[in-house]
Amino acid sequence: MDCKTKNPKKIKESFLLYNSYWEPIEGLSMKERGELLTMMYKYQINNTIIETTDCVKMAFSFIKSNFDRDNDKYIDRCEKNSLNAQKRWHPTASKRIQTHANNADNDNDNDNDNDNDTTISPESSSDSPQTIGNKSKISFNWESKLFENVTKSQKERWEAAYPAVDIKNELLKAALWQESNPHKRKTNYERFLNNWIMKCQERGGSKNIEQEQNKELKNYGI
Image (cartoon, rainbow, N blue to C red; front, side, top):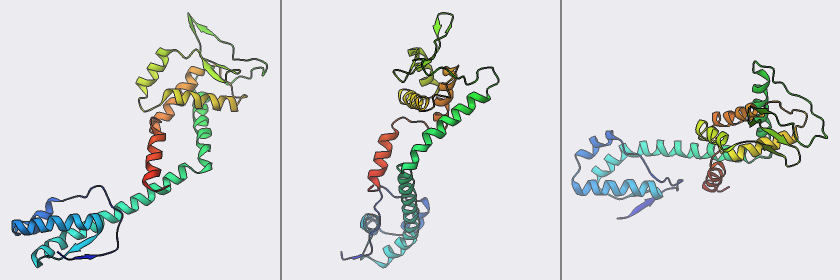
């Protein structure tokens, strides 16, 4: 069969078939239905229109309008996703970590208790560890720049409560924020970290985010 080629479109991995297509397809012979199916795939894959019978052309004309509409929506969505991906990799995106920290910090400040920010002598290598019964409170070590006394059971509780969050990665981010804000030390780091991780979960989590971003950027040729 001869083909008439139009301008190529962005190829999708799939396309939709609606029940409403059955009405124009029902009156076709089995051979014509095969040609119609071939025409649909040719149009979706390389945007070509094959030469066929008038009956098949008529049936395809009803389907083509929906194909064009769906393809236009797909292209618009790809362009928006590409723009959003570029924004996430923009240098200003690093400011989101600071916003994240401020949200957690504000939550801590607004809790109805007496745990407020406290100023600790810069000479101290770590916030003084305190204990509740036999359990040491979570503290921040200013030499290692890491949180201490975060138990395995505490991490497991966070993982169960916030399944979309990479706990290890978020603890490192929180530690980097604390290192950059030495005058905003906490007297209750467990609550601070819980609020930090909860905010991450509410924004959609952080697991596999790098892989997803790389995949998305690859898809849009970035």
